[in-house]
Image (cartoon, rainbow, N blue to C red; front, side, top):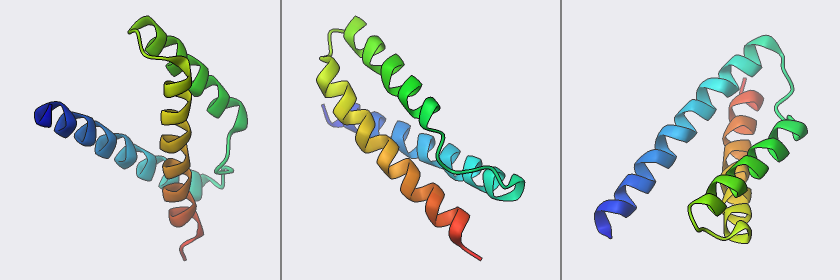
Length: 82
């Protein structure tokens, strides 16, 4: 279990690093941080993928709400810095 938890944390770290790169791009190109249609698309696709892997849709929705919340926090921080 410890090794699996480390893999999950490593994957999240990589995901958030990509979010940082995206935030810098959005800042440079003056693209709005929030993309509501994209957020809903991501959550729906992850719910479906989780369901295929026998993970409840509610769990996947809660998980991706947290992941997206942290991604938005990271992007806000980068976009708003001078």
